[in-house]
Length: 172
Image (cartoon, rainbow, N blue to C red; front, top):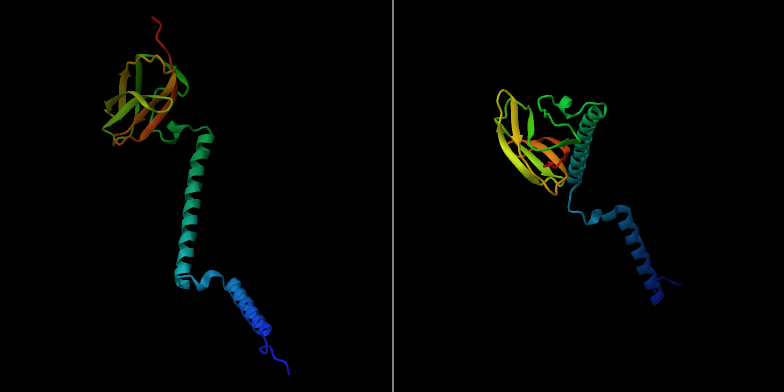
């Protein structure tokens, strides 16, 4: 009677069969043999990821509502009426430049800056807020800077309002 274990080929076949069974088991169960997390921990990770996705979706929806308001014709002054500036976007400005507007009640002062197109400050001044209004006249003479920004920031340096402008050279 012939048995599988009678010769060397039989042992090789048995070892090959064992390797195939182990390989299939590994593929079926994946890397769970080597996972250090318990099923409870994996479930918690899943729930945490699910909550993070819901938070991102909520934030995206809120951001989209703001974008829709702006696209529907409401510029930054109508979205937040407490922050205004007398400089219009893409306007041509020259020295001296009078900048005025309104801000929130909580602000004691604001910083008004003229910036290069890469947003590097060129001229700036701290302005006290009185009755929710600010006003300053800035004098400047730029020879190489043709365009940039007029910006109003709060005490922490957060941009409140920023307008792109073109600087006009004075003709003497």
